[in-house]
Length: 382
Image (cartoon, rainbow, N blue to C red):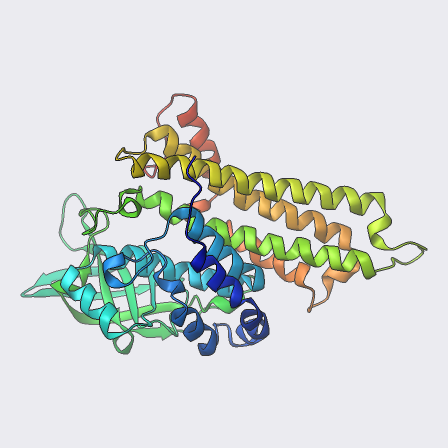
């Protein structure tokens, strides 16, 4: 298994943890990430982790990407989620765009940030030189500070249905204030809308219909593999923060009607041990499954169905186990976790939302089981 990876982006992410922690409460209050944090992450090159090297990107391997997202998510889940979406849209969107156009956009803005929604909520009609587009996309995380929005559309009057994605500058899309939530509150995942907007051909991609314009191993990975493993870093990062917060609490808290610190209680010891085992085991499975696929594409091969199923299983499982790990320490923490300023309580709200995202939804666990037992998958993604 090839575990050699680039530590520079991970070190950059870890160096930003104090800034992220300092701004976590502001993100909660505003319901989006403060501009200072976005700019710091952009200057550190974090949004370009998965962007093509020819555009100044790191073209990083999966483990590097997961660990960088994890480091920011440890400091704040919402900010980690927003970075993850930025990495996906800059990396995948940038690699699919017309190379001349993408090269110009990356060169003109060294701090380029994108948001997006690979959800076909737009309608596109071909016109001379481009497309007329209208649509409204939910869950556009990070839309306040993105330079560009990348939105998927159904092309009108096509059989079978053809999907394209349009790249829209910030000045041309409207943000509709819809993100009033409990978990991952700071992500700014509002709706984004455009009406009868002309989008030139050079600003259009086709995830389903075209190969990336770049041939590095990252762009030979199955797209849905990339969209799954990125989410894992958010879940495991949030869970790690909760477990670390519990260690601190357990050393200082003396429960009511007890003469001993919380950490001396067998029940607390068992819960913490189970949480560590759940989190570390699930994370190791993801690294193992993703590394196998990475080694295959680096050697010039193509990931087979079994390998893809193992990645889907590992990623959905890791999100479920992250929830379980947080739940274990939340129960062991007692009433302390119920206060608004409790990191463990916040982690519980945030980590649950990650597993609701379609790319790491729990039903992929069953479908992966079908594939591993030699049956055809029910989900087209597998």
